[in-house]
Image (cartoon, helix red, strand yellow):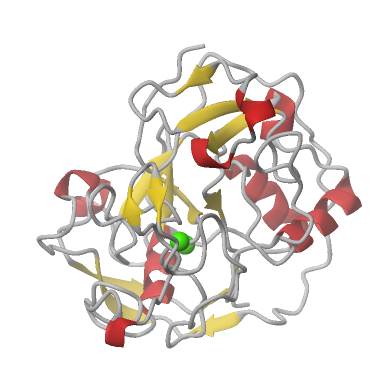
Length: 318
Ligand SMILES: [Ca+2]
Ligand SMILES: [Ca+2]
């Protein structure tokens, strides 16, 4: 199996592969009260960065003034417990389950499972194709989310995230909404809490410490995912926008569409091959993939799933 479009942040399914069958059982529910969601007032903010630490090729810049109307966003990424409620109610089958495999970070795979691994992503060999890996079995068939119900659900594709949102009466945030919410009202700071990665030596997010990709010192307390409420929230009350898991946004990805695109409630390009991911994950490290900065961007194909991609929901203000 050839894997295409390697990225250090996540890995993509081969374009040619089709899942056996995709669940189309969507049960729409009553639009619920936006209980537990954070009301973001909207307004103007400076999106993107021209920071020297940034990656211009990702389209982080130029900095531009964006105007957003008010919206709701979840304080946390969707947890395994929440995703289980969705699956129990709808019998939804994720794309990882339909394809029969997902991408798992090599250090998490048991010896027994490793013995059956036949494919690794060539340019990013720490991503292994693990058969039987899915949201309920994040490291393969001999693993289980038991005791991680309050961790973010992973191995969910963009399509899976959209299905969950539909069921929950919510939607994915646009990339602009995500960044506005993640900045927590701060202007052009590098992180959701300020410019310093570890103010007073304190870990503020779940990323990688040590030498990527083989030695993780876990000095922030976590090798893989952390509970969705670990670490301090930003000033808007959002947890783990930086690190932990990448979060799907509704937009198609483009490195330059936004340069000329509209600045008033932008929703991204009309078409594309990949969807936007924001926020970075537990695999991000300054030396290798410094994408836990609040302006950093990544992307993946909408049917791809990995052990470091999740999502949080947003909703309209009626
Ligand atoms: Ca960590
Ligand atoms: Ca995140």
